[in-house]
Length: 394
Image (cartoon, rainbow, N blue to C red; front, side, top):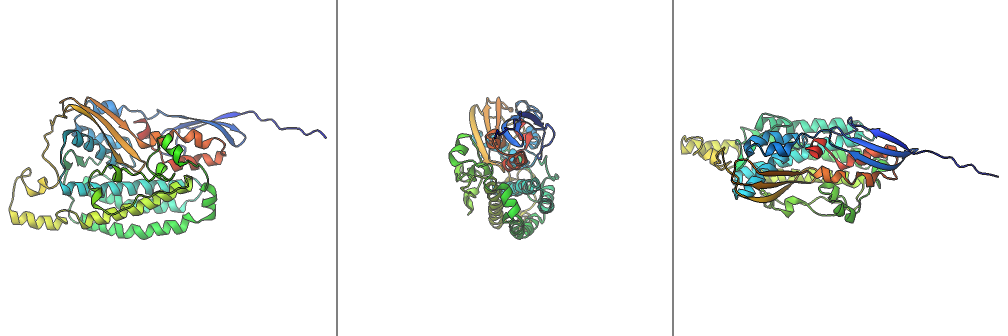
C-alpha cells in the first residue's frame, strides 16, 4: 500500500506593524509551515524619533521632559539615568533625602511597570480578570506620581541633576504607606488566581526557554536574565543611589521559561514593597510635617538658602557645564539594564549621548525563541520579554 505524503508550502505572514499585543508599532515577518513557526524576522524602527540627537542639543534639565518618550511604562527610570550620567561625570553628590525620595519613586515605577505587564501578559492567553485587577492596583501609584509632579504616567520632569525638583507634598508619605499596606495582600491574590491555574501553567510552563549561558550570550538583562538563573541586579552590582541602605533580595528563578519570567516579576514587586517600606521608615528628615516644624523653628529663609531646598538638591546653575570626559552609567529599570554613554566637552550640552535600552537587547532573542513553536505561542513568548517600542526605537 502506497502512503501519500502531504506537502505544504511555507507561508510568510506579517504580524503588524500595528500593535501585536504590545505597546508600539512592531512588525514580525513569520514563516509558517501550517501552524509551526519555521523562521521569524523582527522589523523595528517605526517609532524612531532621534532622542539621542535631541539630547545633544539640550541641557540636562531641558532634556528631562523628553526622556519619558523612550519607555512610557517607566519614565522615572529614564529621568534617573539621565541625571545620574551627569552627576557621575561631574562628581556631584546628591543629598541623602533626595536619594531616598528617588528610590521610593523608582520602586513605585517598577511596580507600575510590572503591574502593567502582568495583566496584559495573562490577557494574551485569554484571561481577562487579572488585567482589570492590575489596572485597579496601578491607579494609587499614578495618584502618588500626580501629587509629586503633576503628571500621572509620563512627563514627570521631577528628577534634577543634584537631587529632585521639589520636596514630597503634605501627606504624601502617609498615602504611600497606605498603598504599601494595600498592595502586599493583592499580590497574594494574584498568585492564588493565576500562578497555579492549570490552564495558565500549560500555556507558559516550559515555553520560550532561555538557558543561563544563552541569556548571557544574547546580552539579556533584567527579569529575562534573572529568570534564567543569573542573580544579577544593578541595584546590588553598581550600588547607585542608596539601595545599599536597605535589606532586600534579588528575585531570580532557574527555569528560564515564560512562567519563570512571570514569577520573577511578581517576586520583584514584593521586594520593591520591602524597599519602599524601609525608605519611608528611614526617610532623612522624616515626613513633611516634621520638616515643616523644623522650618518654622529656624525661621524664614530664601528658597536657595533655606533648609527646605538644600535638603533635596544641590544648587546647580541652569547653564552648568558638563566636564570634559566620558562615562557610562546604568540603572536597573523594569526591563533590565538601562544605560547612558555620555561624552562631555565643557559645554552645557553633551557632545555625545547614547542610550542603551534593556528591551532592545532582550528583543534580539525573539527569533531564536519562536522557531519551532506554534502560532498561538508567538504572543505569549513576546509578552514574556516585555517590550516597549518607544524604548527600542528611541
